[in-house]
Length: 178
Image (cartoon, rainbow, N blue to C red):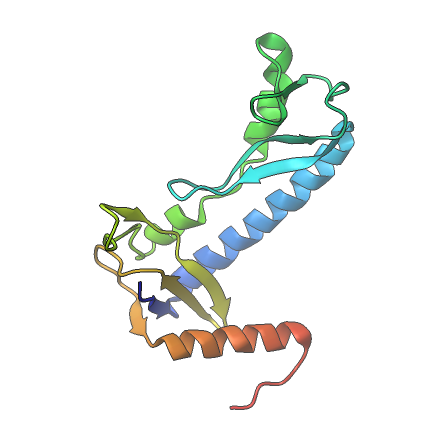
């Protein structure tokens, strides 16, 4: 497979990306803090799926025999899930309140295709592009060619890597040579 890279400096798209990324980070922080407040667990479990947004599916068990109130340990799932029936309502509400935003849906609404063309052995392919923002530009890289209209500018893979290196260098407080 050959990577396909796109970017945009559209201020509305950059804002949508940065707000969604911030909301994702805020949700993660809140989930950690709120899971700690529940007690008797090791934190929220997030599952990343190829076909949908990341999802908080339960809590990691500290002691499967002593779950937080409203939760139970599922041997099938291997983690804490809401209890069945009315006693699990607060746990279900907790899960609902701690779901991360769907970055792929936000970016799809802002000009990125959701689907990729099939690969050699694949009939269809749902891909979440690699995304990041650098210097007022949002970058996206797909593992294979997107299937559908992309309103973003096509870019070279080398430009993607240069922007990624600049982000990494900035995070380490190192200047990047032009």
